[in-house]
Structures are given as C-alpha cells and as structure tokens.
Amino acid sequence: MQSSDDTIPAPQPASAGAQERARTGARAAEALLREHPNAVVYAQRADAALVPVPEELGLEGRPVLATEGRSGMDFFVAEDRMAMVNAWIRVRSEAVAEVRARLCTDPRQWMNVLMLDMRHNRGIVLNMMWPCDEAPEDEESRVAPSASLSTTPRFCTRKQDEEGNVLDCDEAYLQMFGYSREEVVGHPTFERVHPEDQARVIEGWIAAVATGRTQMFRIRMKRKDGSWLWVDTTLHSYLSDPEQRCVLAECIDVSAEMSAQEALQDREELLRNLLEEMPDGLLQLDRERRVVYRNARLLEILPGPMDARAIDREHVEEGEPQRANTPAVTLDELLQALTDESRQSLDVVIEHALAQGVRQEVEVEATLPSAQQRHILMKVRPLQRESGVVTGVIASVLDVTDSARARRELERRATFDALTGAHNRSSIMEALEQELQASTATGVVFVDLDQFKSVNDTLGHAAGDEVLVHVAERLKAAMRSSDELGRLGGDEFLVLLRGISGLGMAMRTAQRISESVRGTCMLTCGSLELCASVGVACVEDDGATSAEALVERADAAMYCSKEQRRGIPVLAA
Image (cartoon, rainbow, N blue to C red; front, side, top):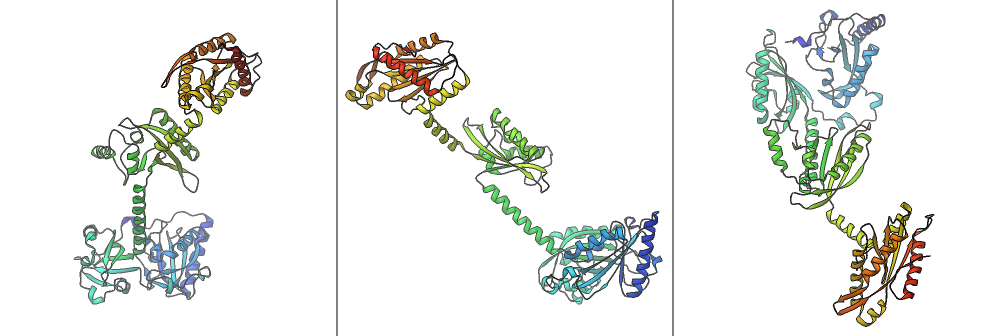
C-alpha cells in the first residue's frame, strides 16, 4: 500500500532552459528504450525515494522496480554507491547522467544505469539499467569482483501471509540464508529471528498488518549453518490488495556494517580500559567547559569532599540527562580542591586552549580533605577538527608533589648555605645585583670574624662550624626584616641593606650588627669570646656600580676595621 508520503509531487512550472532539458531527457528515454527493450526501469522522486513509474509513460510490459519507500541507492553494492550519488548530483543539473554499478543481488555483474530528469513534467527521475560486459575504465585497476566481493546476494525479498508464514521468496533469499525453498515456504520466519530481536520483529509485524504502513528494523536472522546475519528489513503490507494479499519483506545484508560497528565498539572498550588504567588523571571538556569524560584516576589525584559516584546518583535522582560513560559532575566539583590562585591560573590556560588552540602546562596546588598540600601538573591540549575548529579540551592530570619537593630542595641547596641557612655566595651576589638594578638606596655590610682560624686549629672544625651557626643567628637577629644575609665563604658574611635613606642608617645598622656578634659564645666544648671586623659600602650618588665593585669596597673597609682591632664598623671611602 502506498502511503501519503510517497505521493509524487505535482510538476512545477519550469524555466525555458529546464523545459528544454526535460524534452531532451524524454527523447533520450524513448531512444534508449527502443535500443534496450529489456531494460529494467524504476522511478525516484526529488529526495531519491522510490515511487511507482507513472502510467502515462507507457512502460507496460517492461520490467519495473516498483518498490516504495526506499532509495534506489540500496540496490547497489556499497563500493559503488558513491558513483551513484555523483550521478544523481549530475542528473539534477544536466538532465541526463550515466554510471556503471553492481547490484547487491549479483555483485559480479556490472550494470549500465541511465538517469533522466523528468521532474519538471513528471515529478520524477526515471532510471533505466541493463547489463554491460565491461567495468568502467576508472575501475579497471580494481581487483576482479569475483576475488574481492562475496558472490552471495546482499538484497532479497520474501512474501508472507497474515500469520507470518512464507508464501514465496526469491532466489537471492535462498542464497543469502542457505536454505532450500522447501525449508522456507510454508514456515514462519519468526523462528529464525535472534531471540534478542524477536520482540522488535513482532512489534513491527503487528504495526504493518494493523496500519498498513511500512515498517523498518534491523535484526539478526539465522543461516542454515547456524550463523547469524544482520539484515535491514522493510515490511510492506499488501494484505488489502486483492491481487497480492501478502506482506512483502525486503532484506538488505548489513553484516559488514555491523561487523565494523562491533570492531569499533571493541576498540572503544579497549581504549576506555586503557584510559582507566593510566597513571595520569584525564579530563575532557566541551566548549562550554562541561565535563565530557573523566577517568577514575582523576578522583584519586583530586578527591573532593563528595565522592563522584554520590554526585552521579544525586544527578540521576533529580532526573537530569547523563551521557554514556560521562560522570554527572561539574568542573567546579572536580576542581574544588585547588587553591583560588591555582584555579585562576588553570582557567586562563583553558581559555587559551579554547579560544586560540594553545597547548600549555600549568602547575597548580591543591588542598586535600586530609589537609595535605599537593602539587598537580595539568597539561591542557585543545581538541581540534581538521578544519582547525576547537571543539573542547583534554587535560592530563599528574600528581608531582614528590618531584616538586625534590626540585625545591635542589633550589634551596643551590641558593642557601647548608651550615648556616644564609644565602650562599652566588645567591647573595645575584640578589645584590638585582637590587642595584632596581634601586640606588642600597648598601652592604661585610663581616669577618676575628681570630677564627685559631678556633679551628685549637678546638677543631666541629667547634668552628658551631661558631658560624651562632654568628649567623646573631646577624639575622640584628638585621632589618628587609635585609638579606649571605655567607661568602669561611668566616666571611655579607648583609645586603635594602632601602637605606643614607650613610647614617647604614652605619647604625652596621654598629648594631657588630655589637650583636661581640660577646661570649657558649659552645659544646666550652665558652668563647667573639668579635668581628665590619666594613660598610653604599651606592654612590650616581648609582653607577656593580655588585662585585660594591663588595670589594666593603671588603677594603673591613680590613681597615680589622687593623684597628676594636670591632668598630668602617665606612668605605
């Protein structure tokens, strides 16, 4: 029964050019039909759906494909459908198009297919096809169809009565499923349907019989050898037609497509398992920063106060939609362990990835529910199509707390003296050089312990180290909070004075430092009287000096102080 959707649209008024193309197509049809009297014909409307061939064309007695509700492309093997599509595009602009293709029912046989545009006077595209002996020239390099394609048909039909018993079937049906005609005719088809698909078939069958409307579904049917074949099945009810009184079932073999889908699903499952087992956390966001995917490892690295499974249940209970394999959790919930400053830094990196396609890394800090401080490295990468359009971002998340601590320890050792905790020589000189570039209100105090060599010689190096530790503590106590202490080596210390208002402030600070060192020092082995020589140097009025030059001036002033043997600071000339 033909549904209202299959009604051929009424011919529309056409331009002179379109009318001439239509007349050309009609003349070509007449000539070709005379040349190929046995050509099979079928008609398609403007959207490529099959419709009955108009009676006024006078094609009675010719083989006609009158199948309704499907596209003519379905008659041909998958490898040739693109050629059919290209021909369909050409016929709409050129009125006539010709192509060679192979039928699903016999992939070894090439067919000439001629398309004639009759939309302007008949509302259809008329198609004629007849066998040809040769493949198209651009197909000659292909492997022979007998070697590359299965000879088993991929399209077949059967007729069933109202109860579902097979009345008749074509030869292609027997070849596809491997049965003899006696094993098919008179038997119900339902018993050969896969158990998981039987409910779908019964539902479609009842709808086709009750309403007369075309029904389509994809099911598995058993072959004689016991294997299952995926087929797209279309049911057409002709029970009200007194000449047919049957339900016509058309089957298209889609097993290759389903095998490809199953292989894709297997690869997706493998990929999913690999992602779940990765040591890194993974986070995927769309352009609106919605969470598309996250693996379980992410929650181990960035656990929040609420477990993600609990969040999932909460969203499901509220009736919110949830995509497959996607946690119903927001980005804010996943990143709530990050500090505010870290979250801001990450937001900037994500924005650069979305807006500019920039790949960046950012190290952030997180506070876990246990109050532990963790360092997290996030590598953010844009997800781009071939056109360059950014569709989202993916971030790998790695806990680098241990390596961050090791790095900070290396930096500390490279910056500070292990014994006293003061800056080492290179570090204090670098700090002084930076201060000189930023400000001219800078000075230094050079401190050298008196008689320190005798301490090492008489009491030992352990006592000498103990003295250096005490001296460093006294110097730090006497310094201003803005000053820095460095150990130049041995018993020599340097105090960097920042933001001094003049020589008077520098000398007062140096005097306080000298007095803090002078006095009794209690050691493990006894007591010791300490004294230090102190030299002071400040930036000249023009400010043109280097760190080395300023320290050399303070060093010279320190020697003047040492010559006086009174521990009184001396200002460099």
